[in-house]
Length: 299
Image 1 (tube, rainbow, N blue to C red):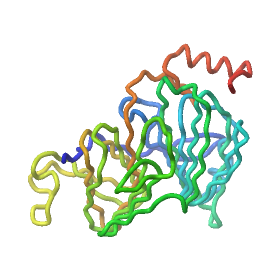
Image 2: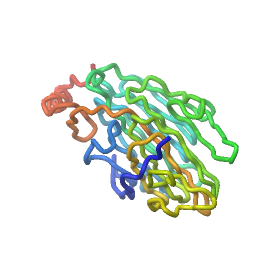
Image 3: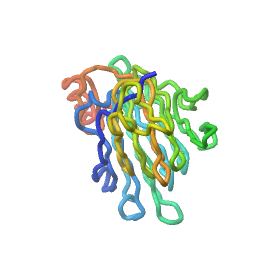
Image 4: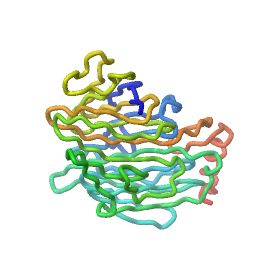
């Protein structure tokens, strides 16, 4: 077994999206090879309704899949396929834009005015860029929750983990998307497929992620982190990008740690990206926006 060393630690940056939604972007619109097959991760967490109620009015997508995971408040969805729905705390919406879809997402806060969720963009391979659009809505009770002997909890949105399988199926990037909670002071090693790209996004508490290889990569109670590469400390709104290996080790801080653990198979294809449309070539990108102007975007 080999521990994945930390490749990079990134703090999510404030940004505005949609019609003026204040959010934090962990990654996106940069070097896509670092996170391939993923393109973007947004943390939309806010307690001021005026900072999110304008939402994300009607806009197009092509060539990607988006997953929206809500922890507080609600998000109302509508799209050009006729889908309508509302996802609330613990629910997931996975949308395959494929050949083209126009949709809107309108967040509403809970009774205390709080809104919290994440949106992840996964790229589609060239062979599936123009596939038929698809929409999956998964309610909280359908998402398996596995609790290990030490109290570590894993909520499995997608993929296989600890002998269970998440409800979202048929995703091109073959991702594993897990919401992990580790109790205060506990150390946990979690499996990750060796050939997958992987990252962790911390959104509650803090912890230390192992950043070593070799015989003392996993510390023991007697040895601690001595003689190993120092761990990487990650706190709220921090993203940890991992290098290669088949497991991730984290030591939870005094208040525990909760994070998204996401992995997927790299596509290793060229990316031509502008706004909500992601293709493989600039010609394909120009063609997509030309179709938007002509009204032939939706197939």
